[in-house]
Amino acid sequence: MIASNQTTPKMTSEEKSDYEKQSHRGQAHEAIRHVVAWYCTLQAVAVLIWWILLYLFPNSQIYFWPEKLGRSSLHVLMCGDLLIYCGVGIAVVWLARRHWDKMRLGLWAMFGGISYATSLSLSASFMTGEAVVGATLMGMSWLGFLHLVAAEYFSRSDKLPFVFRNAEDRSRKRNLLVTASQILVFWPLILGLFPWLIAKLQSAALIPFYQTTWTMVLGLLLFVVASVINLHTAWTMASYGAGTPFPYDKTNKLVSRGLYRWIRNPMAVTGLAQGVSIGIAYGSLFVLIYVLCGGLIWHFLVRPIEEEMLAEQFGAEYCVYKQQVGLWVPKFRVGDSSGI
Image 1 (cartoon, rainbow, N blue to C red):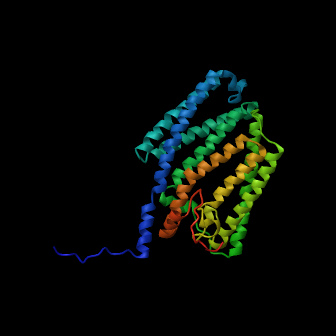
Image 2: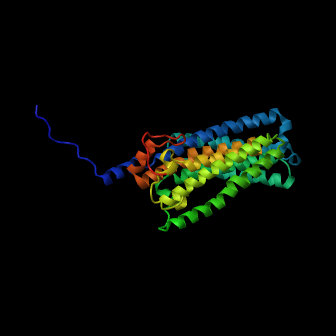
Image 3: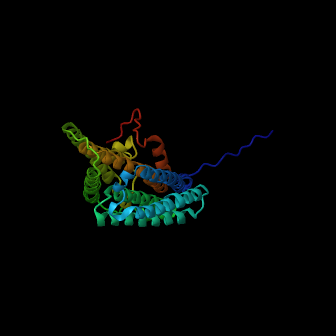
């Protein structure tokens, strides 16, 4: 037997980086396909059960459809719901499981139907001043499906540059200033206006709050702590990443210091903690559900696209970082003494 002297050629760093990028391409799109299938399935089942319960308990119908418009109009809405959520939804699920490109066409058709049903429900509520709960739920359903459609569209690698764009070459102070301006826009909306509106909805639905002095104090303390940590992570990203934490003005360097040494998304974690603290302060179950929905949307729709973008941008460096650092639960490495 003759021993072979041939050895497997080693890849250069550039070849390894290209290999890592190729191995990650399309993973976000496949992940979103699975989310589409599960989301449409659960939504179809939930809508079917909801309509059954609505007719088993007719006294509850006034919360979901204006009494002034009569039962016949409610039957029309039911037919539309069953056709869009159940009929078209199951078709989209089937297409998603078959991995057909036609799934996108069904998804957009379903989004169009939901948009029309939502506008109809909102118009009926505004015109009559009734059925605030139903109109709000339809609005939330529309927002959720909007995230789903957008995630499916941008999960394709060729579409990533439309959202995930690198920041311009500018100074550290300017990156910090841009980050601060972004926070001043998003915090009042996401942590101020939306929870306030949701609390108003809960009040209109006559669902009790659980607000006491100690829940208000606890919520305030948690909000302050979470906000300080969130601001520190934003400062770290803007200071050492040559960009901002936001995808349309993203960093040019992979940041792995500060809290990013132990957890990959400290801003998402602390942002959810801020939302939970507001829910505690309000004593509002609806606000806590709003935060939970936000976390689910980020985890299943935003995160896969973001991770594919980072693998595209940083290659093997990000793959190693992803393996060593936790997503939701911090991983503390023994002997880690890198700077904060």
